[in-house]
Length: 186
Image (cartoon, rainbow, N blue to C red):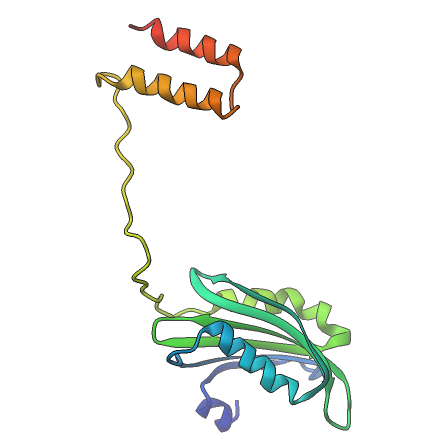
């Protein structure tokens, strides 16, 4: 790996023997006051300066390993003597204090050979701390299940059964049969 890559936060780099595909993973401090989607759009803007006929094929917000992420695929013809078409698959993953960026690229003619690998590799990135969110609801424990000897047990079972009938989850005949079964134990 080149020193310039290390200086720019590259933590992993690999290239195929024929140099028709490669990927790198880099880490950097999380930018303030900019969403990762906006960051992805800036990345695409920078890539568009390197490629002719540049187009973003997909751009998706999702999660990777429970962390907020933006993934996109873009392609275009490189502005160099070779003029080959390249496809880029990028994932930006947001941690609390840093971001990880996965970038995989291959000649467009060979992208299908690398697509599944490029799609799976971002999930192997670890070490990011999730972002704490004040809007994240507190975990609420469900109430304990009713015990058969609880006074409201039968009434609650009948209410649940009625709700299932109302939602169309059971037929009226199923409702009546189950109601008789519950009430016979009184």
